[in-house]
Image (cartoon, rainbow, N blue to C red):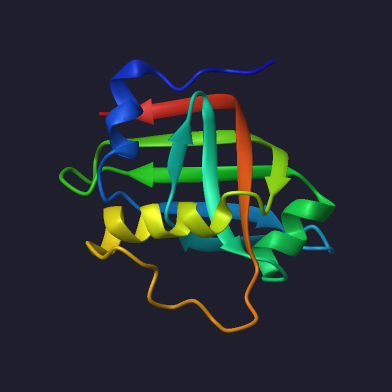
Length: 132
């Protein structure tokens, strides 16, 4: 059963709030990475380079969890558990530039590697919990 991000917490996606993204390794152990995050309708969007551990993990097992903490109040957060419902390269290069503007204040993502292929992973929330 899908759950929509509560209106009261949508502002976290407009702030420079990092998310801690939890994925599952092949042996079932958790792997957590800090990521930039975005919201597209009711889907949470994470952008990464193809072939990174989180990309490989989500392609193999789409179950994920994210915790997004309000940078202005660390006692206010949104936790999301859900599934990756789309992985796409289309628009991913432009999206990482959009995220660089939000998080770094620059027009172009400055850490792009020469052979890097960007991907957007779109996550459908299934459960949310929050505080604050």
